[in-house]
Length: 180
Image 1: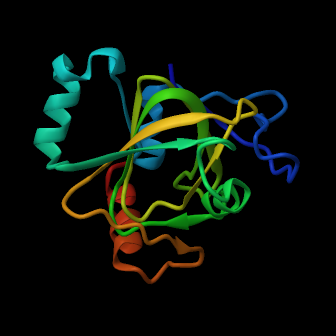
Image 2: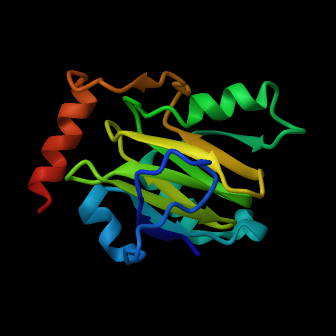
Image 3: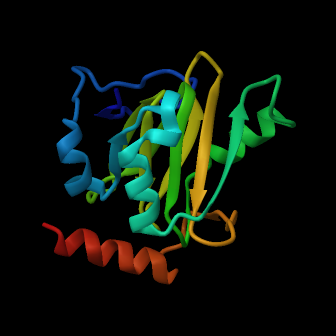
C-alpha cells in the first residue's frame, strides 16, 4: 500500500526513506488536497478484468501505454537515467504510473513547496498532475516495473526547475489554490 510522509533535507543517498525526526506521515486521503496527486489500488495480477483500472483509463482518455523496468540489469545507462529521474522537474501532461512489481519513491512538492515522499509498491496507480514539481528514484531494492499511461502520443519532455512560467505550472498552482 502506498505510503507518504514529509521528507528531511538530507542530501544522503536518495534511495533511503528520509523521514523527519520524528516521522511525519501523511494519510493517503490528505495527499490530494496537499498536492493534487491521486492514488488507486489496482489488482495488477488480473488487469484484463480489473474494473477500476478500466474505468480510469476510459474516463481519463489514457489510450497509450508501455512498460519500463527500472533496474541495473534492464535499463540502459541506469546511473545516468536515475540521476535524470531524480532531478526536480515538471511535465506539461499528467504523469501516470502503475507499479506492476517492485517499489520506488515519487517525491512531490506540496502547496508550501515542502517535499512529500510517496512510496509506491505493486498495485499502486499514481497520477501526478501536469505542472507539479517532482522526481523519482528506486528504493534500496533497485527495482521497479511500471506501466506508463498517456493520452495520445507520449510526451517525454521533462522541464527542470525553475519552470514557473510554463502554462501547466501556472494552471497547477491555480488548481491547488482553489481546491482549498
